[in-house]
Length: 155
Image (tube, rainbow, N blue to C red):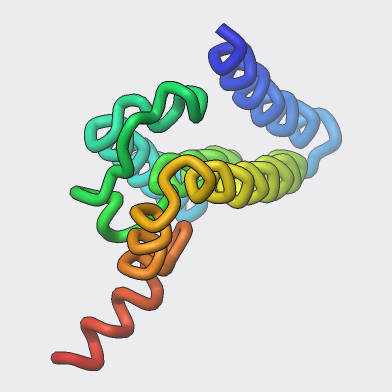
């Protein structure tokens, strides 16, 4: 229940940012921003969905996680759920051209980065060498930069 409340409050904060942007005239929307924003939102939603599909317990407490997900989207980045959420936050803010919502999206993204860091420490405590090997095989937390560079170099 706590996770659901946090999710609701998170999206309410984005909506408040959009509303504040309209009230203070800090929203500047146009068709390009709308297309870009909704594209990011849809991409983020899909990535978040894939993270749930590959590891349904990943968004629960560490006590309920009983394995290290290493397949699917988890073979590209270690925290695809947070990546998806971040893209969704920025996507909505950009779609509405809202400066306050962009600030809130940045704060929420920093919070999720901090959560990912904390979760990795807990996973290392719980799974030890298994998680350490996973971190070596999948070196990127959010964006698969190193994996893409490696693929480009080998091509």
